[in-house]
Length: 225
Ligand SMILES: N[C@@H](CCC(=O)N[C@@H](CS)C(=O)NCC(=O)O)C(=O)O
Image (cartoon, rainbow, N blue to C red; front, side, top):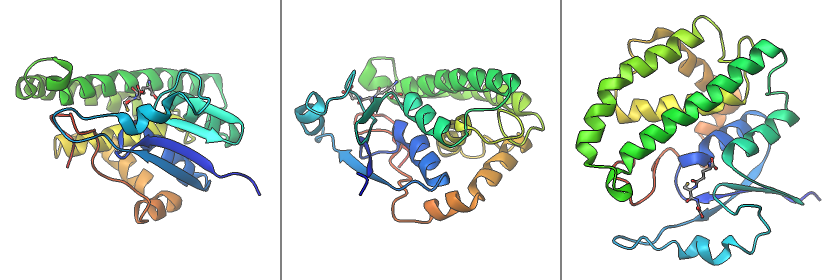
């Protein structure tokens, strides 16, 4: 019998969510190995640190994937590994260019959001000030995504690709962060609905395996819960 796929990550949504959504979409069973940060004020990472260098991972990090002998870190590397196996990596040059742009644009947006949500912990300023500044800029950010999506069904074009799993998750995080923020962008709102109506995604979201909250980890100013 084949060893199960293992996704190792903190017991939060974070960087692992797009991977779990994609695996559910393509119908691949997976197990999760969850690590837990200790309580405030020290937030001990002992649960993870004590195994971090013993798993045979290159550049040990979370999330990681163990698929038999294949061991991968970097959430996008994991997404692309499964994307290649299940034809979710685009088929034309035009699609691939759009995917490359989206992949890195989404990364930039997520990192900006993380910086705001962990502002105290990272020493990036007062959370409320950073949040106000972020929200001021958010309509401009969302408008750009909306214009890029235009009337395409998916971000690459006609076909769903691995970037849609990142995009859906990022927009959903923003809906929690700033309720109603997608309201003025009908094509994004429709896109979100279409994604959630994919039968395998709907099934996963109603299963006990789906972790909606917390989005970020214990030291964050905003965890989405
Ligand atoms: N670029 C990486 C970022 C991974 C990352 O920053 N993981 C953090 C937060 S979720 C972590 O706690 N890693 C464990 C470690 O650094 O040992 C990815 O996309 O996988």
